[in-house]
Structures are given as C-alpha cells and as structure tokens.
Length: 138
Image (tube, rainbow, N blue to C red; front, side, top):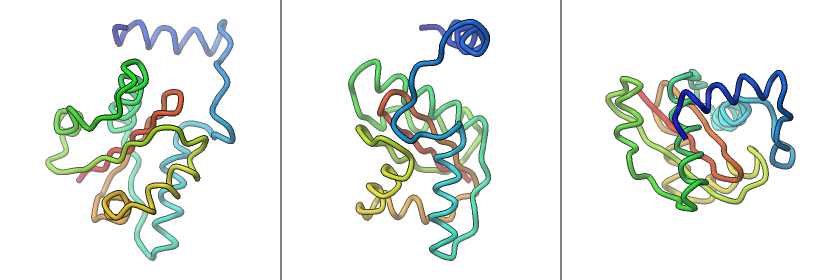
C-alpha cells in the first residue's frame, strides 16, 4: 500500500472509520518508548529522546513484517540513514500482547538487552498487529 494512502487512511480512521482494536493492554503511540525509558531509569541510564522519524520507520517496518509474515532486520541501515543517524541498532519481536511484555522478553536476550541499555541518543518504536520494531539511533 502506498505511503500516501496509509496516511489518508490514518486521517480518515480518526474521523469516520472505526479504529481496529489495539493489542491487549496497549497504550497510545509512544508507550513503547516510555516503557523503555522506565526500564532504562531502573538501570540507572538516561532516557532516550523519542524521534518521530524513527517512529515512522519502525512503524512502517512493523507493517511490512506483518504483511509479509516475516520477522527480519533487512533494511535496518536504510531506516537509520533515512532519519540521518550514522549509527544505530534495532530490536524486533512478534507475538507479545503489550509493551511491557515485549520489553521483558527483550530483556531475556543479551543482544536485545545490550541495545536497550546502549549508549544511544534517540529511539522510535512501531507496532503492527503483534509485530514490534524498536529503532535506536545516535
């Protein structure tokens, strides 16, 4: 689906179309980033700045993964360069019902935990169905 059509559908959904049901216990946009920053605070780390560009890229990647039924990091460097970040990383997941569950699952993996505790400056998260993407940049 072209990006312009997705944007129009998002605008219409807010006015005339019913919103699809969110995943169990999901919060408003930005909740994943807020939950990550709570996690970082408990670890004694500074919060990350939420990047609208990273959010958009993460959201589009989650939509792509859901549409293709494929959990992949393919194209991560492109997503980061679109947002003008020289370095970064990405966590992806499938199947979790809410932001706290996906953060908890990532915390059990050393690579994902390293990303969540990394020396990044910015973050942006996306969700489509139960496909999660969290992009980190600096």
